[in-house]
Image 1 (cartoon, helix red, strand yellow):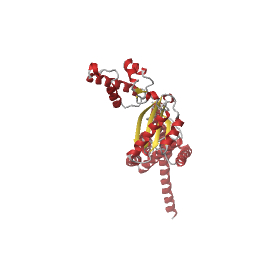
Image 2 (cartoon, one colour):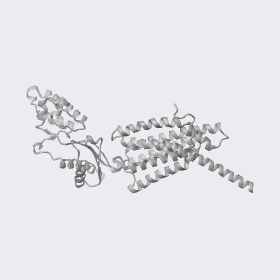
Image 3 (cartoon, helix red, strand yellow):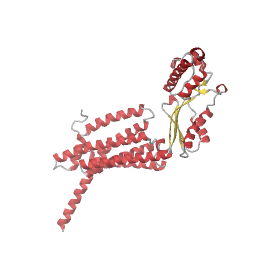
Image 4 (cartoon, one colour):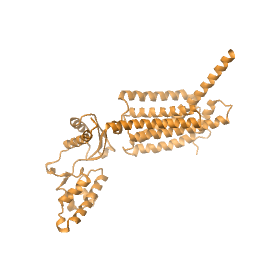
Length: 401
């Protein structure tokens, strides 16, 4: 399949315009990084506590932020998690220390803040919150209370099995709905329990207006180690590809490919800073994917240049490079376009978990495809022309002597 039949675009004619565009994007990203004090690292790299909370109604974000500052030291961040209609937020806290007590205090501070904003009613005193109770605790409490008084008539073993099965169905239903149950009657049709049991549960459990979902805690030392390992992984990937391309082609080809890939990473990091997005472990996976993708696209162009150099020895290198880019243009548009549509779908519909990863690839594929044409190929051409000019200068000097 070809999008163009024998294209003949003069890409090298605009090489300085394209290189200038790269400089503008790179400088804008670097300035943004300087102004913001570096990349905005996620909890994976800076250390801290992240807790996802789903609310029954639109959450009072400013009040949560104010109450959280009163109870927990250090910086905190509160951002929407998922669709706005889901009323979910992610609460993040920086850790003040590295002890287990410091790590646990962050989560406890978040829970205390939520309880202060959503206090339980007097009727709920002494009851467990069904939206935030653990599965084991919930099952044990039901067995101990025996709300339907089954043990005297049907025996303790049968009663335990009944309550364990009911607790399992209720917890599964709750978790499938983001951890938030609106009413006990909802459990009758949703979890398949009897109306009698749902009514009996109201005597021992209550339903809060929020549900604390997934949480993650990373110590500062672990965060620093992960940051160092992520940097090492990226540098090792670049070094390995430099060696491979230098061995397969020439050293200048390897250097040009690494410079182009480094250019892609710098601009992508700049976009993360400009849009104030976090860099997490999934984003690092995106950067490593970007390095491989950009390098592969560059190798395709270089491979065609090498073939044409053998076939067109008498032609100027500039014409050979232009011809090679045009010959691979349909392939580049087809592969890059389809990949871009895929990662754009992930970015729009993939959810918060892979949002950063998808954003990295959306930007990276565009920049990586562009750099193979506008950065890598002109570097090879410039170096070869520079060496040819040096040789001519040496010959002229020798002739003059």
